[in-house]
Image (cartoon, rainbow, N blue to C red; front, top):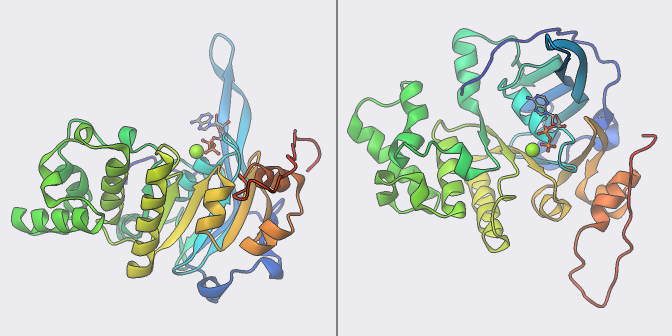
Length: 311
Ligand SMILES: Nc1ncnc2c1ncn2[C@@H]1O[C@H](COP(=O)(O)OP(=O)(O)O)[C@@H](O)[C@H]1O
Ligand SMILES: [Mg+2]
């Protein structure tokens, strides 16, 4: 994976940490592993605000401001919140695609932000991302074979062209694409197919963990379920862990057994799906839930609105 590898202003502090360390919020099922696969502690990502003629940094925008959570092996944690609350920034920061301002990320006990050399190389194989916009995330000038095969070449994991071709075709096939797709270009495919290609690329290095950043939000409703089913099947087959990001509580509650609710750079509430859905504590969570369509038209729901205020 590409991106800046620097970490500035690391304070390692645990102050102002978000919610998730309460015993009742400990992961269920696979997540109750004594050593979680991924541990995020007090993560902070601030973006500089520049102003004036010289574009000097005058302030910082706290896109992620003290976020903590854990993900167990084979587990999916849902990260839900409205657009702009910092979800993508969390995902990208923990993968080192954006430099963190502070905090600590541990993967299988290894410090992600401190890793370098072969340890970093290994982390880059183990931690992948599926992007929201399958059109924008696939290079339009590259054939699908190169797009899916590129990580294998970069990491030197194949010995010849024939092996590369076979690996790419079997990845495409596993993701529900025809093998012949390898010779074509991204624009020749629909949104759902392009997302399958993006998933095949993310799988190429046999990762243990994938950030799924709104993987279905750009797709037609009829296609969304297919992509979710593919991700669920792959999780069962390869024992993958996911951080599943979405603004849509309906999708999140379908996919995730544990949910963290994010608002303005912080996690305001976290717990099991049942805890969050049946007994939401935070007004913001209630407003997200009230936007989920009611499947039974005879029942109506009262819309809850939340316009900020005290947290
Ligand atoms: N590179 C950046 N520079 C400055 N601000 C950014 C940058 N990336 C994201 N932001 C801001 O950080 C906030 C959180 O963005 P993002 O993580 O993309 O939210 P979400 O994924 O929840 O929609 C937004 O207000 C966005 O405008
Ligand atoms: Mg986003």
